[in-house]
Image (tube, rainbow, N blue to C red; front, side, top):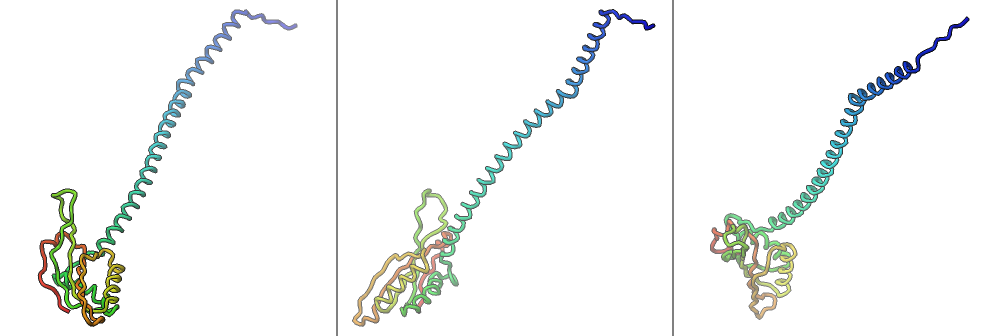
Length: 207
């Protein structure tokens, strides 16, 4: 014969309530010490990630800007180098001798005879600020030559083609009876370094 055990309903309710409270307390403890720290760490990681993304985007923009600046700087350097390559440098302390070494081959190609070269005082360039250093100036070189009108024109065209920074400052033609021996005086102007403007060589170079 089985014996039935009767339990007090209030005791069952208390036990169930105790279990619920225990489970709730465990859940609170788990949330406080596990879930909440993980969520905080996750939020912090997301914030740091967004910050790093912004920094990376800024660095990419800076790199692109630096590449553009470098490209522009290289282009300016190339333009400047083309100008520097056209500067007239003294040969044995004489601009006239340097001009002679550059122009004689061009004259020989067209059959022009250049009698002599002479230097004229350099011309200072206008500056936006009066007290700014004179980095560059213009140096006129005068030369006398003989030949046909066609050879004189051909010579000037070659100078313009081969030396684009050289400008024609003055030109005069003295007509001769012999058409093959026209006499011309030409003044060509070169860019030079401004520091050389104080040391002006006198005289010239004969052919």
